[in-house]
Length: 297
Image (cartoon, rainbow, N blue to C red; front, side, top):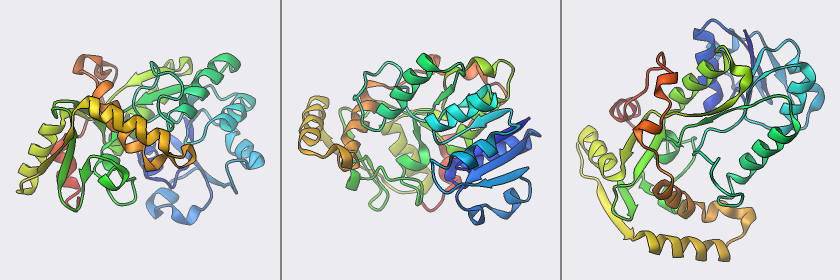
């Protein structure tokens, strides 16, 4: 199977490529700069199509030719190009919390995903795949180059002080996935029989309460993790509303951390809600393994 991976030079793109290659599939990359590819990946690609921007239609249409499946980090333009090329296996950009039950505008960063989902279901014969993974472990812990959910963005984990800020009682469950595991789930899904039917899948590397996260980190690193009590859930709700009202939607990253903390409390998952039985061949990474593989965090 020939799989097209737009954004192949990104953090998740390299994991998607590795997962596809070890399963014996061909991979074609789409991106702006092939020099960012790791040499061992670059030499194994079927081809790399260079694009000048998200709106480079000729490059996108060229990349689609002969493709069997698509895993992407873009949305509507690629969907239309996939339709034109007859590509039926389409994995939408969706590695996040399950936004399907959320009303539009619940979370600024999720509104584009919700809008795309509704638009695709109303106008397209292609049925996208959506992968819900909770939060990337690399983002939550603020691994360099992977995003930042630290206190400077009103997040919870302080990578410098080794402190964990908690709203509520700390028993809320963090639904987390390592980037490598997310890639494994995604490639497994887009290459299986029936992928043309699309649908949403709820997966994760693990579920852990914030208190358990602090304890596990301390045990692996041999240190004490300080827990900073920020206030109750009602106080978080008031803080979120105030920050949103006073903030600029075009700069939502300045207050989005409050919304994510609220999302963790209100939209956690239970083990029985995870689609583990659909992925018997995917080996998940434990929290201890993740921490041991990333000694610098």
